[in-house]
Image (cartoon, rainbow, N blue to C red):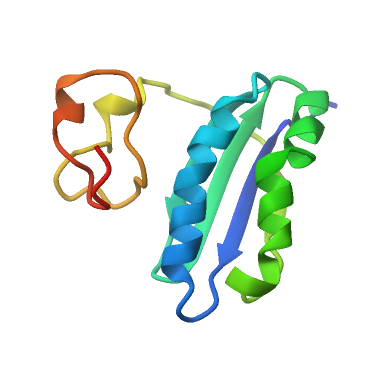
Length: 135
């Protein structure tokens, strides 16, 4: 049986803490970029109070290292402050994938609803600020 090295995390913000959760996830982009074994990390806003993370890892060891690293520790230390309930972490199986550089799809595109942060590499799309004011 193949190992599941990918997770889907669901976060439900407490009333009035939605922006704090969004800001935490934006900061997570930088934290996870320092983790060589975290291959993919997406933060998503699913509804006004529900957020999600999808991440994929090179191995189960990399997954465990991520769960023991700064972002997971920081989130767990703030559960009572920001979240209405503990985050749910579910392993997922990827059945198929089309992977293009992130600046080609949602980032900076008018009407895009799922991005929190733009990619760090230069592109014509990066010249426009995203909806939360980051450039």
